[in-house]
Image (cartoon, rainbow, N blue to C red; front, side, top):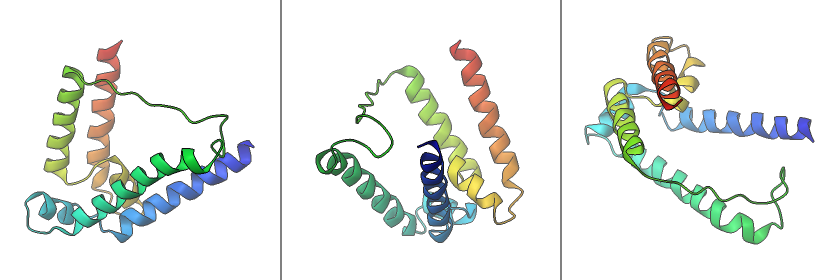
Length: 135
């Protein structure tokens, strides 16, 4: 079961990375032109992703008795507060400054865009600070 879960995770990650690359989300200049309202192509990508996730979350529990790799479907309640708002704002500012978020930055490393290591270092540093602050 662990091997099947590992293979499924690896395939899902590869598909996600390929999708980010195919949609050009790994190119910061494309993302920045989207954020400056100059190119709306990524709006279709994001809309398609939201639609797929919405359908999966709504239809999977109705079509399957249980998930493929777990005993039951889980609910993920979210709580909104000051920390969530500050984190979202910091994420948005970082995204706007460098033009990438974590997934596309990691995928872009596969294309040889080593400059994104700086963005990933900033992401890791932010996660470390938040982890230390939350203790």
